[in-house]
Length: 212
Image 1 (cartoon, rainbow, N blue to C red):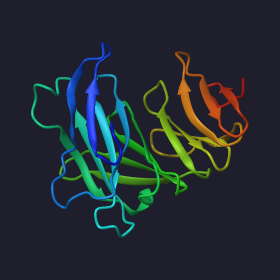
Image 2 (image 1 turned 90 degrees about the vertical axis):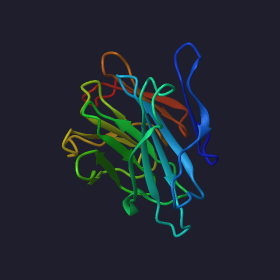
Image 3 (image 1 turned 120 degrees about the horizontal axis):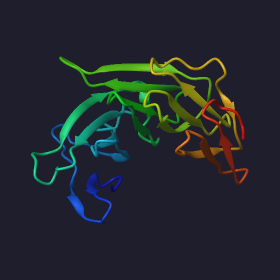
């Protein structure tokens, strides 16, 4: 995806475009100062695209969550699942990150807040919840292999937060890592790997948060 130009595209593992790069759908009001913050493909091959904009330049961000099916090239336009103003997700100057759990719920972390937002797409309207975390500067968020627990990287407090499927932080959380952690990844056993920018190291933890 392309950030401020609000272009998106979906490519398969063979390097073939399933959806050609095209302008992101923008119904009124026009989305100015916009960023495509993150894109996650779930186990079913469905792409979830997170955009973070400030259409009125009033520091009240608009969060848009769009879903693109694997056969997007042959189907109708991508479905916009959520498009609302969310003051708790921070400012337009920040970069939000996205994770999708096994129930299809979107989890969003945002560096300017000590909280995580969860969006559940439901009828008649989406359910938006905010969960506080014991960490500062959340920069990246992933879902554990069980599809329900959520890990959050806190770059300012040098630790990781772990939330259960209800949004509650585990009693043993947060877990200390190196200085200014930036990114996180899990292996097939559920072990966690974190890159630490300032300390130029990689931290390895078990799925229970113990340093290995």
